[in-house]
Every structure is written in C-alpha cells, then in structure tokens.
Image (cartoon, rainbow, N blue to C red):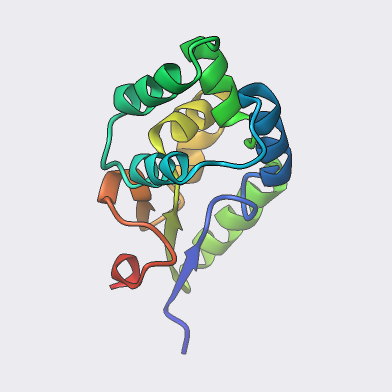
Length: 149
C-alpha cells in the first residue's frame, strides 16, 4: 500500500529547459563544455555547501566581463513556466488525504528565489506538502543514497 508520494520539482511542476540553459551558458561563457571546476562549484552550490555570494564570486572571477546580474540570469535561464493545472492536481491529491506528500528537489537558493518571485502561487504550492526538502537547505542531493535515507 502506498503511503507517501515523493515528487521532484523540476520538470514535474516547473518546466525546465536544461538544453537551452547549457547552450545559453556556453554562448555567454564562450566555452564548449563546463570545466570540472565549474561542475564541482555547481554541485557544491546546489547542496548549499557554498553560499550564493561564494558561487557568484567564482563565476565573476572566471568570467569578469559578465556582471553578477548577467550571471544570475544565465543561471536561472533553465527555469520556465509552472502551469497552474499542476498546482490544481496537487491540491486535489492533498484533499484526498490518502498520501503523505513530499517534495524532494535538487534546488538551489538562486533558483528558489526566482521561483518565489515569479510563481504567484508558490506559497500555496509549498503548503500542499507534508515535507518540503530542497537540496541546498539539507546539504544533500539526488541521486545520492543519503538524501533518501
């Protein structure tokens, strides 16, 4: 018997354009691939192991022609729309009281700040869950086993 449903956030509730993000970043950074150091910093940031200031400082140092605002726009480029019918579905599921609803997402501070600012019903969405876990707050990320334990 199913007692709980664990949802991801990206491409489940909010649409993401990861390929578009990658191409946009490569274009602005004038690179063909992410360096190992960039991948590591992105992972550290996603897990909340470095602050937003430290994350942005790394990119400003490596791409000095770009402003912090431009870097934030590049980082948030992947975030698209959140169709309201997905919230409606979640609210119906919550009303049924059949399942414990959990959100478990590899979400970082810049992304959640963008979502809070651009999704008018974010608070209502968050309140639908019995537990709401964002990787940067719990310092763990999927698909690592420890986040599920």
